[in-house]
Amino acid sequence: MRARIAAAAAALLLLLAGCSSGGGLDDGRITLRFQSLAWQQESVAVNKELVREWNAAHPAVRVEYVQGSWDGVHDQLLTSFEGGEAPDVIHDASDDLADFAYGGYLADLTGLLPARLRSDIPKESWETAAFGKGVYGVPFLQEPRVLIANAAWLRKSGVRTPTPERPWDWGEFRRIAERLSAAGGYGVAWPLKDPVSATLNLSLSAGGRLFHRGADGRVAVRFGPGDQVVPRTIREQLGTDHSAPASTLGSGGSDTLPGFFGGRYAMVPLGFSYRQQIAQQAPKGFEWEVLPAPAGADGLTQGVSPQTLSIAEDSPHKKEAMEFVDFLLRPRNMVRLALGDWMLPTGTQALKDPALHTAKYGWATGTALAARLRPAPAQSVRGYPEWKDKVATPALQEYYSGAIGLGELRHRLESDGNLVLARYQR
Image (cartoon, rainbow, N blue to C red; front, side):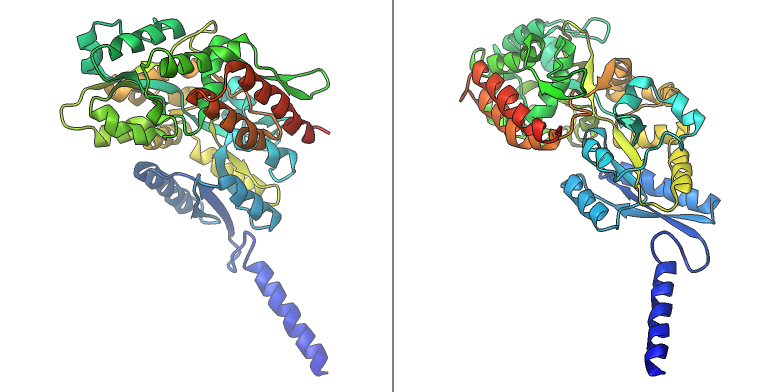
């Protein structure tokens, strides 16, 4: 008798535990967990504000805000997926989705996407989150690379200021960086702590592709002439022209700002969102401007890996999760998210907002580049994180430092790289 009572009590406890976790509350409301990777103060505030607005308008579907971090997010998500504890709505970047999509951890959104959202975001942006025959994330924020320049230094030198309509090409950029160095300091500083993303995405302007998919669907690395333009330019600025300092090669973008403000370098290639730090930290009276990145054979085209919102395959409330995503990405809300992160929205309606077309802080320059943004070369490549960490990053670091030449760089990217990718394509 006591055994039966104990068993019944245990069963009741399990039932109660099941009712109070995994997306439901005791009062019958649905709870969605939304993991956000917003980190800038403005961005965090906007995300939390939107969650509050949703909760006020949707009492039956409550969203719980979970603060995540870009640092180590891939491993953190993998652990949560395998442990059955993944958030319902997941903020990530499109170049981090491939392994999760192919691994069955993310829901295919094809049948869930509202028509408004599908039509508002351009085809090129959707391609960044498409793997196989499915769509596994909604791309909503994107960040072109631009040149942040010391406006007074450029004006004094007399060089032509580039515009989206008349950009510098890579050869002109090299010559101008050398000319700017003539008066002391350096024409440009390359913060290449993460050299792979910068190199691959800027190489699209010169026709670089690097990853080539065959008729059988298998991907191979080929380091062709278009892929070589950007790394050769950087290497020549560092080692031949001495228009760029080697000291910044291991630096992140933020690390270069004190030297930029102090007049050590005239230009720094950075992601568009760095403008917020510059606006906040620049000394009083410091003049800076936003210039388009150099153009190549394919003009101002460059690769991007947009930030995305995905839904966990294990989420029991996919329909409600998509309704929340649709709410977050209404045009006005998408503008709010973009302004909070100092990035560009993917949505065509949001991109028309006057706030994104002002000259102040270079918003208009960045918005003019939106139509030239394409999926990053590695977007759909399985095994890219391992290829990047074990092959490409050390190879490019050694090439830029002068330790190896172009031939050895090609060998490592192709031969060593294809060995890594082959393990993911069996």
